[in-house]
Length: 326
Image: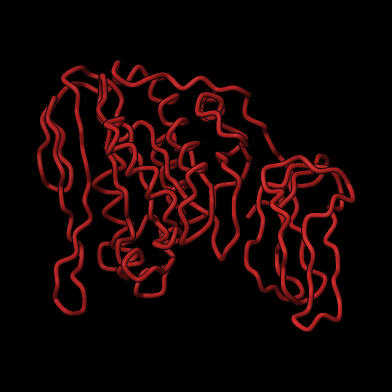
């Protein structure tokens, strides 16, 4: 538990019991227009952990932004003890442009810990590592599937951290996937700083799915309840079913190019031979069924109406295979 004392973040001081929004400016637009990243901080007068809820590292992953927005709007970010920091949109440049990357073409989630004098994305990563990570005990970073691929609501974590597994059980997303930390990612930077981070994936880019948002919000409330940080005015969220752990999974790839007609099986358990979709040509000459190659949970589905041979179209769990998560 952190000592109850003034918090210095991005050069500004936030006192115990204080609520502040700090508008962080790293670089202006090419028009010289100011562009701020709002960092919303709420502190209790009672000592406790410091937790970060962040989204928008990829600027087109809107569903995570919606989850953090709801935490603020519903005052779930008002802690009974400790401090809650919310950054709804980290990559505000990509958010404005409806783009995954920064204007310099870099993926922010591959350049951590960054550099003070590096690329624009690298400078952002540097400031997160220098100004935010030293303050944190826990973090939840919200993401969505890229390139029209829809993720079932899931938590991702490494399989060698017992405390993270406890937190994943508490968060209780429908699925929990074991996956390695990727070099240069925010999750990897948190791990190196001894910040316990859960990575949430759900929905797809440039889309808001309310069911996914609800799963994220409910999980946050369960996590804050466990940390004794949930305000007494907030209702508890009891989980109906325990999270399903997935260690091994494989991607199905399209065997031909054409129009993909998805049968909406994402999140469901399917048996071998279940028809997941059809692929047709635009001219009415063929229609080919896409069948599950084995039983398992469909944890990701490609929602693009047009696919090429070799495109990843479904991500399905399977026991006994080596971990092939991206």
